[in-house]
Amino acid sequence: MREARNPAATGLGGDADFATPAELVGHPARSAMLLALLDGRALPMSLLTAEAGVAPSTASAHLARLTEGGLLRVRRQGRHRYYQLASAEVAQALEALAKLAPPRPARSLRTVRKAEALRAGRSCYDHAAGRLGVALMRSMLEQGALTGGDGLHHPERAARDRLSAPGHDLEYRITDAGWALFDRLGVTVAPGKRKLVRYCVDWTEQRHHLAGAAGAALLTRLEELGWVRRGAQGVDRALEVTEEGHAGLGEHFGIDSAGFVRGRVA
Image (cartoon, rainbow, N blue to C red; front, side, top):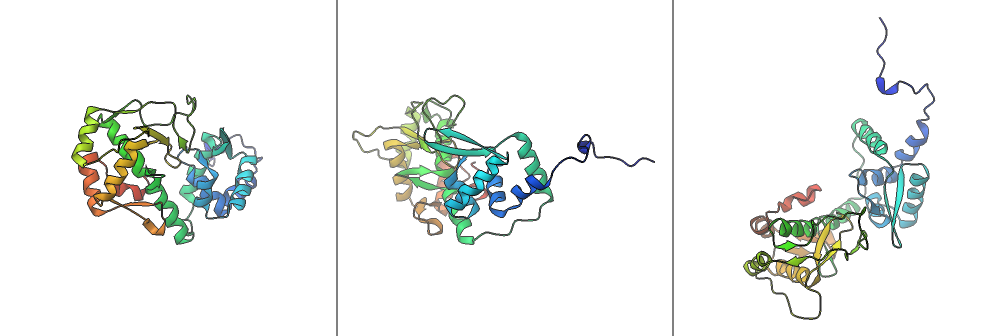
């Protein structure tokens, strides 16, 4: 009786050099960066540095090795560089390895909590960003409170928009339904020369979050209501949703904000 062979191994001929990619993937900092990119996004070095828990100079060296080794590719937008997995084959290989690998030893708990707090919610100048910010904007679009775009960053057709920067390609505006929502919440937009509605391409979620005078007024009101508070996990910019906020965001925006800490936007 012939021994069954793995179809996936057919044609390798014993010539595959597993040692090279294995050495690249096997380093804890590099594996943390690769896992952070497994959802298909292109991320800046600053975020990958936080994910890996290493110094910026060390992160730069690791990213260079991953790029030279063919596991990552670099996307440039303006003066900024963003890293993403080089191909679907790389993603498939990482997913297969993840099924075989034991849980990764925890990095510094403070580093982990800081990075997660910033991704869950943070202030971007004076408006909400991170999962909280993009969830608020997505909800307003779904409710018809905002119009002018779909809330997503489309790099393949972006003219001036780039990751981790104020947006310019679209013109969002608040609808009558949006003003009614603001009235129900008690959001007061201060008059002035500042543009009413702007947006940023969120640096962690790569979707749009609401900026401009409207975005600032909304965050101010959420803080006044006690729905969010600053300083989560000791990080000044991090925004934490309170128990009252979970209920309020669910009622007025249909947002499951408890999901932010589990790495999803609902």
